[in-house]
Amino acid sequence: MNVPFLNFVELKVELEQYLKIEREADERSEFVDGEIYAMAGESGKHGDISANLVGIIQTQLRGSKCRARTKDTKVRSGSLKEQFGRGMISYPDLVVICGEPEYHDKHKDIVLNPAVIVEVLSESTAEFDRGTKFMRYRSFNPTLTDYILVSQDEAHVEHYIRQANGDWVLREYYGTDKSFRIDSIECSLNLADVYDRVEFEQES
Image 1 (tube, rainbow, N blue to C red):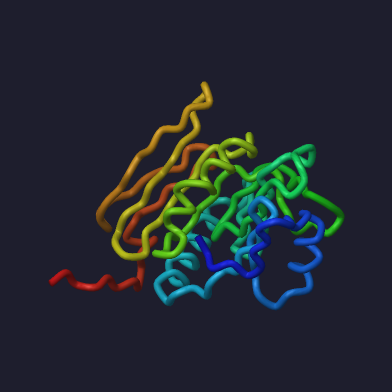
Image 2 (cartoon, rainbow, N blue to C red):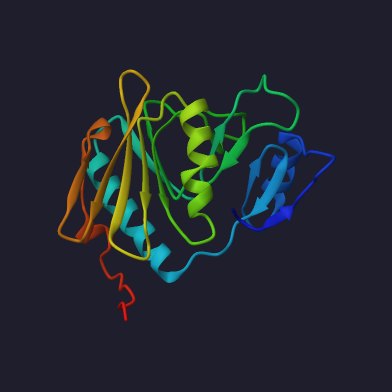
């Protein structure tokens, strides 16, 4: 998980306290059950992959009912009826919203109805992205149909797809010769395009 920015053990931070801090801060941070976690700066590969993904998906969404938002858009995963200090506010690397966006409050910077979320993995966040974060997304965001994890260390994509019965199916793709489709938003991605200009370290 990211390095704690403010880590309250006994006294949890309310969601609205976090939002007041976050909206006035220069650096981004995520909120998980009353604790605030600073987000580390991205690597060059992370930045290239994220930019490639936005370009690929946004181009295909033109004229559709869906839109792509980049990593400055927050997503709330948790009910307002939860106990004090509970819930999660995250910054996906890319989120697709279908239909009119639904927001947490009048600031309109926290989305409640994500359809597709894409995270570019890093060493410090991979465990959190696969574990706690995915659990919250699938439990509290019923509009979410696809969760996609993209490695920055090799050409590898993990595509989780929600089934009609609520179960999730994982499909994995290795190598820049592979491609896959996000049926829910009618987008196709070639890994060669996702990893355009990204150089991987050669194995010894």
